[in-house]
Image 1 (tube, one colour):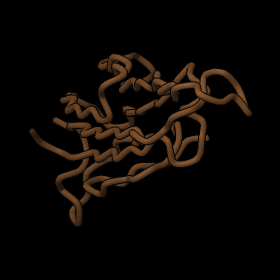
Image 2: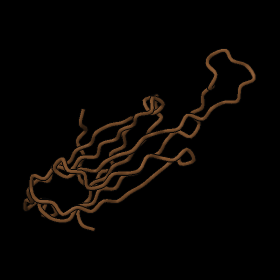
Image 3: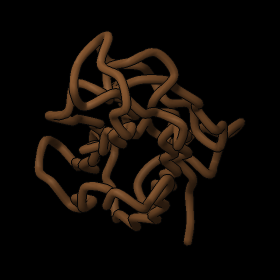
Image 4: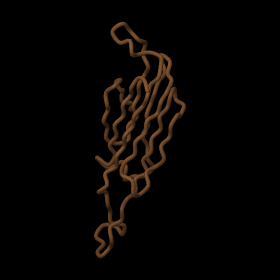
Length: 136
């Protein structure tokens, strides 16, 4: 499911969402809209306290195994990737990026979060903030 983004409003999400913004025409009341420069700010954090027991339930005298996140995200313009993050390393708990785009009216910007690791589907594992702004 796609969550709509509102210009200049940070959108906080939990999990692996897809977030979308469509460039709309400028109006007299909102002259900053329309074609021009936009930037996409993304901040992603992973819950650092996720651990598990590598030997299965009920095992004793087994050191906990840290479950690594595999989360990454892609910023798309009209379905074409313009920025792809690298997956977090086992020692990383956060990543940020700023992607600048030159957009026309009706262009669609999406930010898609994904992971192949099952740990990233646990409740409150992944938290993200995405903000779409005009200008540099």
